[in-house]
Amino acid sequence: PKHKKGIIDIFRMQSFEPSAIILELSLVAYNLIIEEYPLSEKYISKVTDNLYRLECEVGNFLGVGRFVLGLPGEIQIIKSEALKQYVLERHQLFNTY
Image (tube, rainbow, N blue to C red; front, side):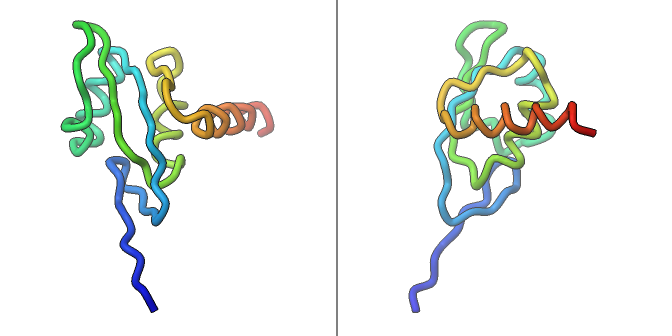
């Protein structure tokens, strides 16, 4: 049997089928992601003094979703409709408990 090689993403999530994402980060989100997830730094480019762009692959949406949901208004999801949908679904759960 063929052994599949998985990835571990910058949010420390593992997967055999990674998804490409693009996020725009405020200065606040940029500083936090660099501090919490140092591996992210090589995937981030500066757009302006207050805007940064993260382009990478993620193993699943659990790690990145937690990061996005924890910083409302600081992050814009540019790529991955599936990630946008995941975040919307998770956000709706805030009102159910």
